[in-house]
Image (cartoon, rainbow, N blue to C red; front, side, top):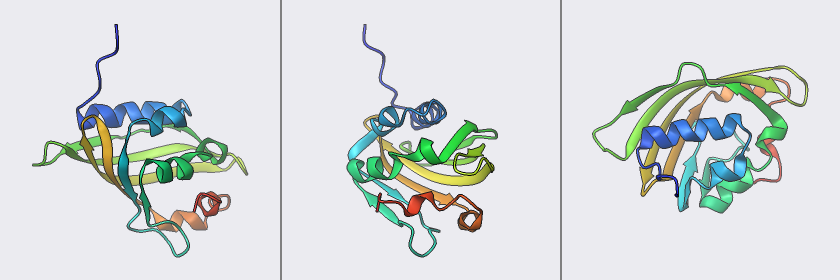
Length: 144
């Protein structure tokens, strides 16, 4: 019997975090609509500000586990909005940097929209000051 599709934005988001912890990037990408958009409003100079389409998101995330070894997402708080397809997420990701073994500890706020059980918009407000930490230069790779 096929699994019931996840359509609640909060449930889809929680499922996506489990996939990231499992380092299952192809499954994480499968949660995206073909025309989904990922934005980084606080992206530092030279870093991507916007990824248009599932293929661009896939290229950006392809090597993520080779750079960051995520261990947990403590303190996840999901807030519903007046739009039933949009949530605001406050969370923290912790783990280690693969390149140098240093700690990874990032705080995020994300505004996420879901339609038909797929991510359509994901605005990721991560801390741009963190890119000055050793080993955090991985997003300047060929994914641009």
